[in-house]
Length: 198
Image (cartoon, rainbow, N blue to C red):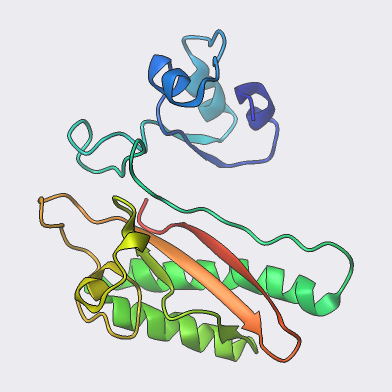
């Protein structure tokens, strides 16, 4: 979405990986001319701009990276008017928001505690979790490391390690919260995932 369209889209917060030649080289997309005061223009309209969110750790130690790194973002869309599928779509966002609040309110939270809360929220809404985890670290392709030794990389029932920590290189850990809900009987499901820690 171009910046002009974003300004009128209804968003309240815009996260930007980088800008200028760096992003143009990565994506092949020319941003075009930008006003010098573009951030202030968004701010005047009540839209928060967070820049350089995905810069390399060495350049911005409190951020996740792009380049060779993996971070997930996903939403579920419903085609048609099936009320159960629409309820699932809506519950995904609600459960994500409640899971994020639970994370934000507990400075000592572990992957195990967050997983248990997401599982409880899903059951309370009448759904089942669709996988063995409810999220993962942002990093160098974390999904390639799914053996038992890397359980601390996931929001799972087996992860007793604090989520707010630094990794082996001393960088702050960032997390994806991944809500995957299913209706086993009717054989449909959906997911909602995004950054948890920014």
